[in-house]
Amino acid sequence: MISHLSEEQLSEYVLGQPSPLIERHIQGCPACRAELTNFRQALGEFRVAVHAWSQDQAKQVLAGPTALPERRSWPASHQLAWALVIAVVCVIASFVIPRHGVESAAGSDAVLLNQVDAQVSRTAPSSMEPLMKLVVQE
Image (cartoon, rainbow, N blue to C red; front, side, top):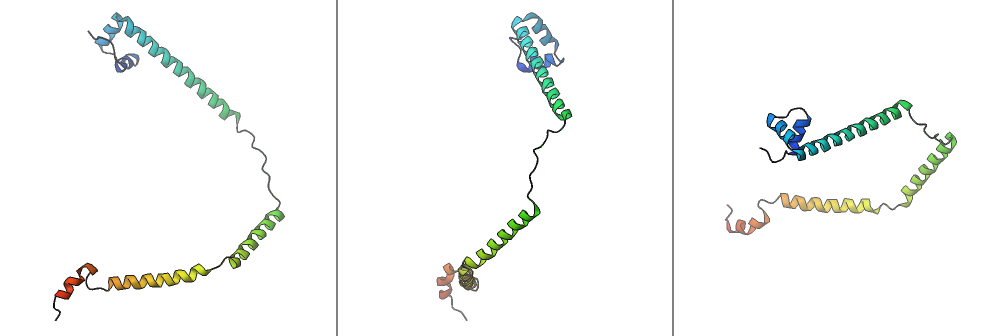
């Protein structure tokens, strides 16, 4: 005979799929019957909680959307004034902020391009150059 039922076996019993051995064990074991009763009570409480939650959600949906606070909008003249202020600040900032970074970037780009060109145009890698000097070129 089985010592006690596992959670899986208790679940099978609750779902209505027990084996004859499980049914006999539950009839003869008070500990497993008590565990089965606790399991069924827990499922019942869960069912009630889910049902209550779903009813609350349904009531909220059926009640309709809650009133949204009234949105304040600025008059068109205020919006235009702020847009002009921002545009003026951007124009002034474009003249005030120095642009020395553009020229230095172009110079450093040219230097980098020359270095890459020198590396690519070699006939052999720098680590092989001493060997190339040993080879007689005809």
